[in-house]
Image 1 (cartoon, rainbow, N blue to C red):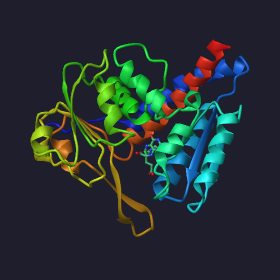
Image 2: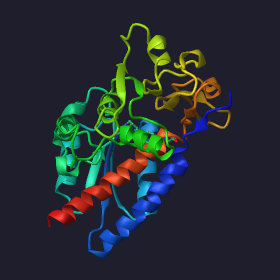
Image 3: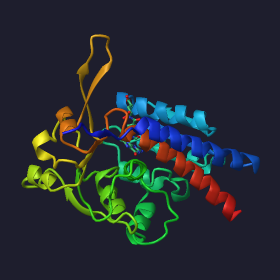
Length: 296
Ligand SMILES: Nc1nc2c(c(=O)[nH]1)N[C@@H](CN(C=O)c1ccc(C(=O)N[C@@H](CCC(=O)O)C(=O)O)cc1)CN2
C-alpha cells in the first residue's frame, strides 16, 4: 500500500496566515489594531513553547502581543487580578489562559472569569454552551482552536468527512469533547464515537473508523493493526519521553509511526495539528476584531 498522504499543518497554517494578513490589513486601515493576550502561569516547557509560538505567529501576521507570565507559585488571587486587567485592557482584542494551570489551581474558575467576548480559545462556558445549542446553525462565538484546526486541516486536504465514522480518543476539554460537537455539526456531518480510558475495546472501535483523532498523551497508543486501511489519522497527543544528546526534548505522539503504512492520510506530530491550533487562534482574534467593528 502507498504511504499515507501527509496532513501538513505547517503549510496549511501558512496559507491561512496569508489569508488573515489581508483581513488584518483591512482592520488596521479602519483604525482597529487586533491584539492577542496570553496569561501563562508557571514554567511548563510545553506551555512556554506553545505560548512563544502564538506570539511569533501574531507578529508575523500583524497582531499585537500582550504577554503576561506569572511564576508557578503565584496565588489564585494574582491570577484573577491579571485576568481582570486583561478583561479591561482595550488593547486586548482577545486572550487566553494557557492550560494546564499549576496543580491545585482552579482552572474552571479561571476560564469562567475570562470576558466571554474576549475568549479566543472558545473555552468559556458560555461559548461552549453556544456550540452545544447552535450545533445546526450559524455560530457567532469562537470555536475551540484544536478541533477547529483539525476540521480545517481535513477540509483543505479534501478528506471526506460527511457520513464518515470518526472515532475520537480522549474526552478532555480542549480537544475530545468539543471535537465530537464540531464533527457532528450540520455541514460537517460525521458520525462520532467518543472513546476514553473506560472504553472496553478501544482497538475494535478504532478499526471501524474512517477518521481517527487521538488526543490522550499515551505514546504510540494507536498501532498499525488498529487502523482501517485508507483512514485519516490525526495525532494530537504529545508526551515528552526524554531528551536528545543535545538536550532537546524528545517528543512522542499518540500514533505509532508505522500507521503511515496503513492510513490514507496522517498528520505528523510535530508539524500537524499544533500549527493549525495556533492558526485557528489567530483566526479567532481576527473574527473578534471584525465582530467588534461590525457592532460599532
Ligand atoms: N488555553 C489553552 N491551553 C491549551 C490548549 C488550548 O487550545 N488552549 N491546547 C493545548 C496546547 N496548545 C495550545 O495552547 C498547543 C499545542 C501545540 C502547539 C504547537 O504548535 N505544537 C508544535 C510543536 C511545538 C513544540 O515543539 O513545542 C507542533 O505540533 O508542530 C501549539 C499549541 C494545551 N493547552
